Length: 112
Length: 118
Image 1 (cartoon, helix red, strand yellow):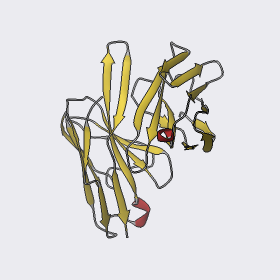
Image 2: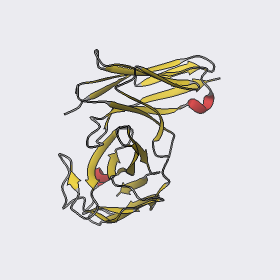
Image 3: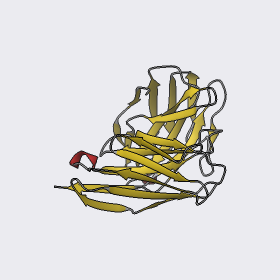
Image 4: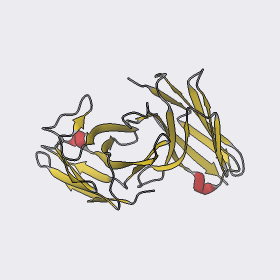
């Protein structure tokens, strides 16, 4: 089955700096890669996703890149703000059965 | 996105008892899923709740422990049976929304049910 690794497990940045979180996956059949943000006491919130027919996708301060050859994808947050502090999860899916395999999560702390 | 609600939001239960968690969606969806998130951990898929048929369980999860109902396209329940402290987790319902033929889908999560078993 699919295995998703995520790094780093914790990340601390100063407000205004950029943050990068990286994930690798094992199943070459995976073609859908969402990112979720989970704030304390809440369910995961879908913030951006990418499908295997594109290499990069951007939404305001958030961008995701995908390298299918290397089987890795990354989340980039620019101009970080304190409200970006949360746990971020990457996931991968073959797209046929909607079954998401999640990474282990990254706790992002944005300090003033 | 879909609006998903779960009941209860949290509960504290005694070992040996059972708890049924409800998941309600504001629109009809084909696919509904149940995940478990142990304290400080990632999300693990328990099962896919199929409307009109038995749920499909992932390796390590069995129907006797986690019976699931899916009576219609907007509602599902997960029961955690004969609970032990190891069942203390957040239980999350999620739904899939199709974006269109050949485009793909997105998956959205409910707020979760925080279960503590004493």
